[in-house]
Amino acid sequence: TLIHLPYSDLSILEVAAQILNVDTYQDTANTFVFPLISSNFLAIYAEVGNFVNLLKLVLSKIIRKNLINELIATLE
Image (cartoon, rainbow, N blue to C red):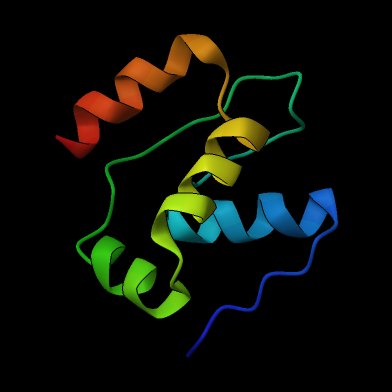
């Protein structure tokens, strides 16, 4: 199934949570919890398309600066 991307902030957070397989997420002022990224991670991204722009959007919307390095390390 393709994931459609509406442009409201809440929808962006919901989509990002699905893509990153986030078990718990709150508003942008709070900490996000990232479990291990599922084996479906790349398959989901392939279906969404526009990988780079979507990743930038996700990072800018939901990841606090102190978590970006942790996420990058997880992806590597």
